[in-house]
Image (cartoon, rainbow, N blue to C red):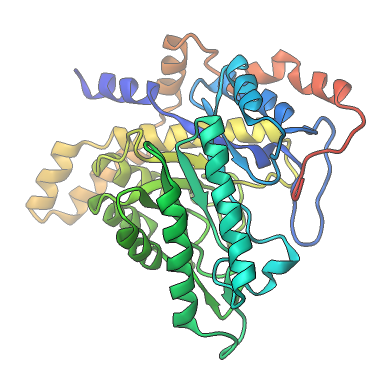
Length: 386
């Protein structure tokens, strides 16, 4: 098989999970801007997600956020997804919005609050059982704002204890994905601030615990691709939350701020054997001012383009240059792949998959955007906290 044919075959197997919350209203700490046609229920979120998959062909699963996507019958929600041509993906917990969590959740100094938080995580595993989900995704806002506010080591002990209880509840084929974030909303210490802390806890827990890399959760200048390479080498990379950042956790569309970084990350994924079902490619974005569905389609396409370029890196030429110590040639090999216009290649891939070669144009022609604006009148629009 030629290099080009191999790249096309790999691209046809790619899967990018979209987040339910990205279809609802979102914003900043200052304002959430409402849009017409936004889903009012988890079922309508799945309807929109199905359209993304219909036009991209590579977005077959949808992540849920609990309690934002709480329903009475999760089996019915899973059936609705399948009827629309998608499936339910990762279950994301929420231990950061209740008033009880002002000083933390599973790291809180009070045992009763820790119990509440762990019970919520166990409830999320129950939902996994009902939906057929394999992944429990955990992000904790826990931390402190002032020196002396709480015992740093004690909080790590509480974290380990809570994670261990949830880990023991996981069933066959299920896993825990632990996310890290170096600051915000806590500003002095964050209880899971970096990949090393997440890795240490996951290593102690066992093989069902793996690390999630959110591309917006790093300090400026962090070499994220090094983190990816290291976690892949250790067999502990569970997945990504793809988005973009200019300054902090901006949650902008993936590839918007630094498409070259996204390419570098995807090269390490390809190089390290991470282009597989064991590494979940998920979006985690807040579309504050742009239309929801077109923005998500564009994000999926950005991931595809970065992946296509990564697949086109000439491994033999790169290896020869590296072994020969030819710095400029090695860099040139990488840059040649990055500078390749892969849009014609991706159009061919889509046509071979029976899709329209231009997903955004096809979506606009479909009339779905106009239809949901006309039909979704009344009720409570979904958004942060709903």
